[in-house]
Structure formats: C-alpha cells, structure tokens
Image (cartoon, rainbow, N blue to C red):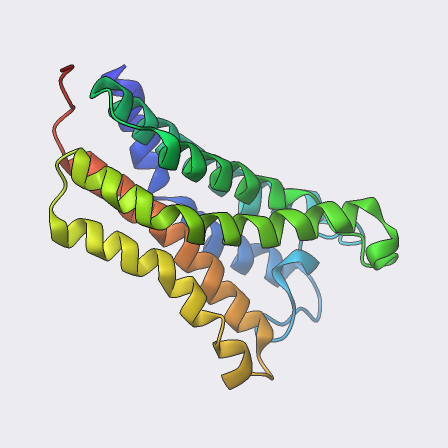
Length: 205
C-alpha cells in the first residue's frame, strides 16, 4: 500500500509538465495552430488527425494523475477516521478534469453531444475545484501539514479564479490565458501531492 501511495503521489507531480509537453508536441504537429489564440480543445477536436492522441496524453492521463492524488488524500483521512467529504470533492474534480478529454466537434459545435459533454466537463471541473479548495486545505492540516503549506494550497487553488480576469486584460490572447489557468489547476494538485509526500503516513487512531 505504501509503494502504491508513493506512485500515486509522485505521478501527481507530473500532470502539469505532461500537459505542457503535449501542447508543444501536438501544437507543432498541427499546421497553423497558435498557442496564443486557439483553444486547447482545438488540439483534441474530432477533425484534428492527432486529436485523440492529444486527448489521451494532454488531458486524460494528467487528469488520472490528479485522481490518484485525491484517492491517496481520501485514504489517509480514512486512516484517521476524519471526514473525507472534501477529498471526495477533489476526486470528482479530478475525474471531470480527465473527462475534458472527450473531444469537441467543432464542425457541428453545440449541435453535437460531444461538444456539450466536453464543455460541461471543462466548466464543471473548474467550479468544483473552487468549491473544494478550502475543505482540502483543512484536510491537509488534519493530516499534519503546516499552516504555510495549507495556505499555499489554498492560494494556488483560488489563483485560477483570479487568472480568469486575464481574459479581460488580454482579450487578444485567450489561448494563452486558458493555458495558464489549466496549468495552475494542475499545480494545485501537484502541491497537494508534494505536501502529502513530505508527511509521514498517518497511524490509525
């Protein structure tokens, strides 16, 4: 169990880097693609010949890494007989993040159920993250994390809401703003992962 937990948490550190690497690789393979102006979902769209590969490596697998972090957070809280509600919320967020890999159909837009599903998971995961951040910060304190670590997690988690304002400040580069927000979301679970890795495994009470 200890080895499995370590694998989950170490994998959680790599969601953001894998997302960035996938953007660079599949963006280079897509003629005329602009990271400043085009949505990330364009790389994973049905009409992109590399779309499903980007969906797998750029969205689904990084989301699964976050799922592993949430599972380990829940497991540690259960050992202490502490509430796992917020960890379950983080798990829901992570699953929704992974499911943003459902490809949008830009030829039919919202006449396609695929586009609707993609949009729901994209918007939903961000909203769920904002809801669960305070509770997950408290969960870290319950597990023995320092006040500083919990506050950093809280700050990173809500940074995505602040970054949303960049759409108004940088209206001509929406693609860049979207990428910053997604990477910050991955950094949130990476900080959770890093914090849990530094904590001793909890002992049953």
